[in-house]
Length: 573
Image 1 (tube, rainbow, N blue to C red):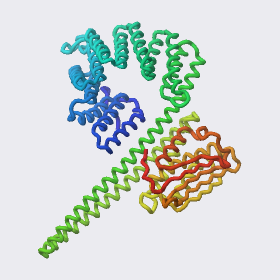
Image 2: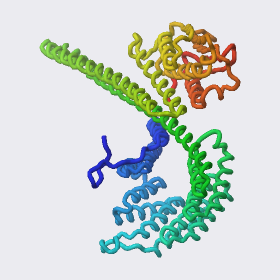
Image 3: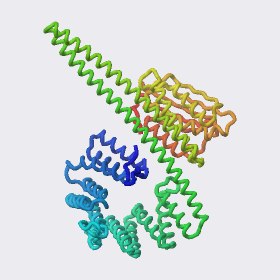
Image 4: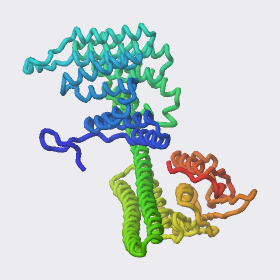
C-alpha cells in the first residue's frame, strides 16, 4: 500500500525507518504484553511514533502517539503524558497555531505539576519556537500573530534560568545550544553561535559526558565549514577523534564513525586535499556497506519475529475455536441427557440438535485445517520472497564484502526454509527428524559454495527434535559449514567434512552432542577465522539452547556442542 497523497496527488515519500529502532520497540511491546504492563506498552507506542516521525511520516507518528496517550491519560499526570502533549504540538507546527499553543501550554503545566525539569525545558523551548514564527504570513492572515522575537528570547532565557535554579548542568548546556541556534538562525549572529556552543562544550567536558561533547562538536564543525574556518574545524575534528578512540570505535564498530569520516572528508575537500578526501570517501563507503549488511540482518530478524508471531496468533485462534466447540458440545450433551430422562420426543429432538452440532464441528475443523495450510503457505512464500530479494540484490552488487554478506544472509534464510519444510512434511507434529534435516542443510550449503566433491560423512541418531531446538541447531550448522567452505576447503586437495549428532544419557538425563569437523588448516584465533557476526550468532544460538561448546584444532577445525534434550524450550530472538 502506498503512503498518503500530497497536494499534487502523488504518494508522499518517507525515509526508511531504521530497523534497530523498530526492533527495540518490538522488544518493549512484547515484554509489555507478557507482563501486562500498561506503562511499558505506552512507552513502546511512543517509540513507534518517534521512529515514524523521524522518517518524516507525521501522520503515522501521530497515530502511535495517540495510542500511547489513550493508555496514559486515564492514569493522571505524568512526565510521559507531558511529553506526548509536546509531540502533538510538534505535529501542528507550523500548520495550526492555536492547537500547537494549546498542546504546549498543557504539556508545560503538567510538567510543572509533576516537577519534571526536563519537560519544563521542552515547554519553554517550544514556546520560544512558536513565537519565532510569523503565523500571519506577512499580514495575509491578520487573525494570527506575527513573529515576536522578544517573547522568543524571554522563553529561551526562562529555560536557562530554570536550569540554573535547579542546578542542572546538562539542562544548562542544552539551553546554551538552543539560544545559539536561535540567534544564528534569526539574526545570523555567528559570534553568539560559536560562544553558545563552546559554553555547552565546556559543561559537557566538566561532566565527562563524551556523548554530549560529540553532539555539540558535530554541528560546531559544520558551522566552521560554512564560514570557511578550517583550522578550528580541524581542531574540533581531532577532539572527536580522541573521544571515539577511547571507545575503540575505529576497530570494533560503526557507531559515530560514519559521520566523523564524512566530516573529515568534507574538511579535506574544502582544503584541497583531494587524495585524503578520496581515502576518507573510500572508508565511508565501507562503513555504509557494513551498515547496510547490519540493517539487512535486523530486517531479517524482525521479519522472522513477525512470522513467528503470526504463526502463534493462528494457533491461538484455532485453540479458542476448539475450546468454544467443546464447550458447546458439553452443554448440548448435558441438556440431551437430562431431557432424555423426561420425554422420548425431547430425546429425539436433542439428537437432532447434537447431529447439527456435529456437522458444525466438522465444518469448523475443516476451516481450521484450511487456516493452518494457509499459514504454512504464507510462511513458505515469505521465506522464498526473502531469498529471492537477496539473490536479486546480489546480482546488482559488485563489492565483494556486500556480496558475501548477502549470500550468507540468503543461506540463513534457506536454513529456515529447510526447517519449515521438514517440520510440515514430517509425520510427527512440530518435530524435525534430525538425520534428514542435517543432510539436506549441509548439501545445500556445499552446493551454494560449489563444493559438491567434499567427502561428507554424517552420523546422526534417529532423533526427533522440537522445531524450536532444531532452528537453533540449523543456524549453528549453517555458520560452521559456511566457515569451512570459506577457509578450510579451498586450501585442501581432498576436503572432508564430518558431522555427528548423537543422543546419550548422563545422570538420567537425555543429552544431545553435535560435532562438526573439517580437515582444513585449522585456526589460530577463532574470531579471525569466523566472521564477527557469525561468531556472535553461534554464541547467541548456543545460549538459547543452554548449551556448552568448544572450538579445538584436531587435524582441522572441530566444533563440539552439548545440551540437554529436556532443556527449556528456547525463545526465538
